[in-house]
Image 1 (spheres, rainbow, N blue to C red):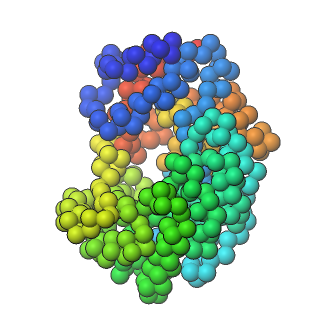
Image 2: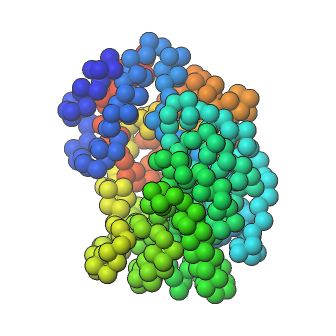
Image 3: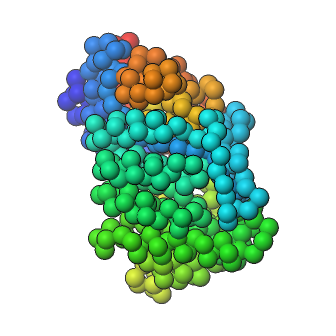
Length: 397
């Protein structure tokens, strides 16, 4: 069954309801061999219990939903049903933030350890997100757990707290396949964009000092794992030359421009074309810095899902800061998207993922109903997988 499913990935689905538009970049990302093997193993399972034991292809770990900033146009401002998810602990002084332990916004360290054990056992990469990842009260212990187990992680941050945690960050990022991404959206307007009423200069200085300490502490062959992304806000594009110049001085060698997205619908907002032209000009001026537009990920065609369960929930594990596993990053924090809570399995991620309860709830989540107000940039490829799995009677076993 697995071989048949993999072989069938070269053809379009036969259903008359299949999508008619395909994105090559979507297909390359979703129809890779590892995803195919995972879906093939699920399709070849004899029953629900066997299917539940098939591991995902990668993990998104939200270690905290708290953030010391209040950034304008934050795409993770709320969950889909309006429950507050992040920015629950905005600080009076974000330059000297103090994080508090909150069971609703800070993932317990035992859940982090279990995630690392799961990832190590299955050879998976972990995408570490937030809130602000470095705002977790035990972030040094979290980073040490990844480093000591040699588990690769992709860490996303606003960069404000890098200097304070440079040493454990260096240890974690030294692991092969690990990366550290800082979102640096503006220069002169950076403070205002982050919800900081004072001058942008101290914020810029603090982020650049952190990048300099981090890149400088890494072995030469790992320094390319630290990079900067810039959202194509009009004022950020005007400042792009200054940003690239300063992050280059800090040792950063990769900068990517990504489109601005609507905070709720997640649709791309105009400005990316201008960003592409600015990038083209800057590429001539900064030959030592790789400057790109992330078209392959963020500029995909979007559409409304029309399928009854989401294949992405079978491929990707999302661990929320509240201890729940979720169906999708766009629905994290929403009650209807919860699969299981780790505390019900003694914080053992392997047991929680392998549970029939988790898989039954994943099949019960309907994108056609729950994503009707969301433009999903992966919907075409996911539709393809959905119809393919239906051909293998994935819901009946």
